[in-house]
Length: 379
Image (cartoon, rainbow, N blue to C red; front, side, top):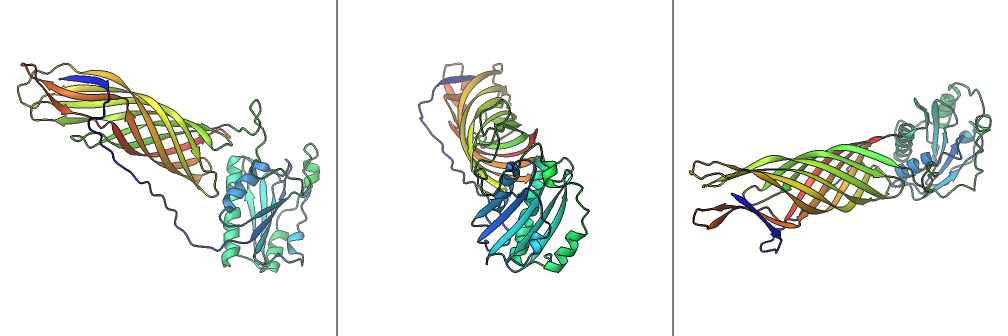
């Protein structure tokens, strides 16, 4: 049993097309015309919180308007001025150190009020929690749900909340709040990360992957497990690295068998959509090195077995996938890919008279699908 490798001449190309379907089902709710949002904060109108809220409301509102008053007027939501027809107003107060306070009101005088504990302040987890509650509140008023309150009920609820021990102005004395009408563009709300270029906020996701791929006619499917790391930031582009172990698979021909396994290391880039909601699409490309090990196996045919061995193959990869954010730091992804081998690999049986017969030839194009579960490290 020997292995031959040479430039791939494409004598026989086996292609397999995979279609990746991702669906998110839920009740259909009409979009509101606009949402006017007042953010009371001590750090220039909480730009990172505004990005999360904008993502959560992207599919519910045709437009968002922002203001950033220097202090909270808890009576303002209950005054007689009406909300424009089809619109929603909300007040998000994150100037308190340990909680956020939310008041949502629509044009039909339906209210949702919430106190949101912030165990670690306005960190990533706190921002995600606020964003999800804001989305739920807007859905409630749009659907006219029974969970909404009347003006009088909402006023009584807010009046029962603990009093404020300091004003927002006092808390933000060391960090002036930007005046309404002079907010930075919501599409790029991130401040520059310390030591990095403007607008860059590095992130790192680390996770586990499980893969099924097409391999050859005698062994149609092989399985792999591995780990993946994705480094990104505020931009849609990211870099990824994946290390994988292929579970050994065996083909037993009448004369002789072969067991195959592999270790691989790949890396590349991907570009993700920046739409609202929890689902993001991604596409990318990469390359890697695959170390394949092979071991001839007896099948009772009285054949003298050659020793096993291993060799390296360079591969390229194209990918497209979908990612679901299930929590602030937890993501689940499904990715369709196609790997192309740059070497024509095959496994032959050599007879004593010098003739050779083909035992197994891997597909030069190997499509597959990967399930990943990853967590975000750091803040």
